[in-house]
Amino acid sequence: GNNRPMRRVRSNVDFSGGNGTAAYCFDAKETAKGTFPLESVHPHQVIRLKRSARCGVVAGLMIKFSTVNRVFFVHSKDLEAKYENWQRKSAGKKRAERGTASFSIEELEAVGEEVLRQKINGLWDWYAVLEV
Image 1 (spheres, rainbow, N blue to C red):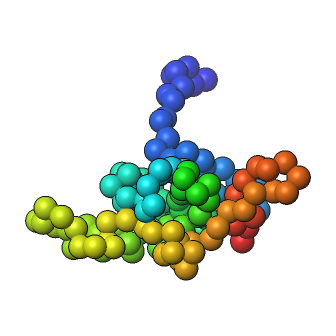
Image 2: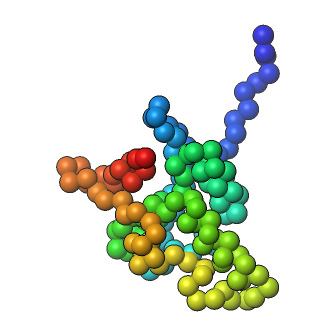
Image 3: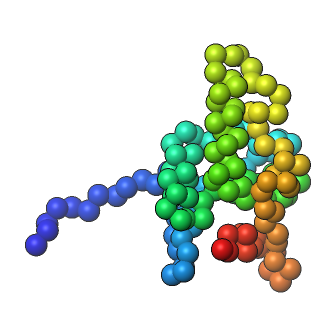
């Protein structure tokens, strides 16, 4: 038998799982600002989401804007593009170009998917935006 102790691996995302037909992986973030700062996302999280998406996993970020009580899901590919653009444009500069360092609600309305609340219990119906 294998008597080595189990090693607990700390995950770098908030949710990773599946339902038998599809796999899901996302990190949940929250901001009290009117925009979501990309500096709130760690490079290793972007890499994890990118790798998961390459393997067919529905991967991305759930972003809650607490002041307006709205939640958006942004797919890994859109996060990745924005993140890499921000990294490229801010390299060697003290301040990033306007609009590159964060996601605005308007931008997420266009590239993301809004997570709506269920009428019955008021819970965020995040699974609805992840269905493939």
